Length: 76
Image 1: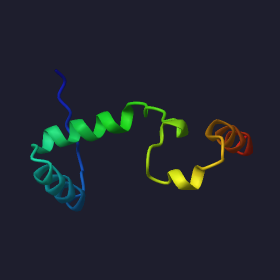
Image 2 (image 1 turned 120 degrees about the horizontal axis):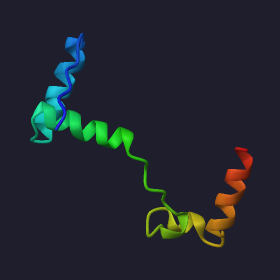
Image 3 (image 1 turned 120 degrees about the vertical axis):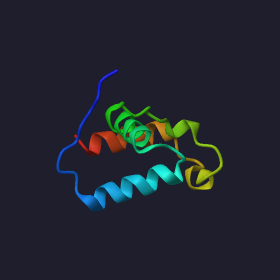
């Protein structure tokens, strides 16, 4: 397994990292690994069609797939 050394890490950032690791019951090294994995792994795409409950009433009568397509087209 590789070793990563970080130079010139601001003290404030280290304190935040250490506090976060403590909240998550991890070591600082474990927390850094988790954060890097989350930042570097591609997010799993979610489908609006999979929504259950939260906001469901807002989508009544609206085809989720068509809505997503219109949104995507607007960003092109």
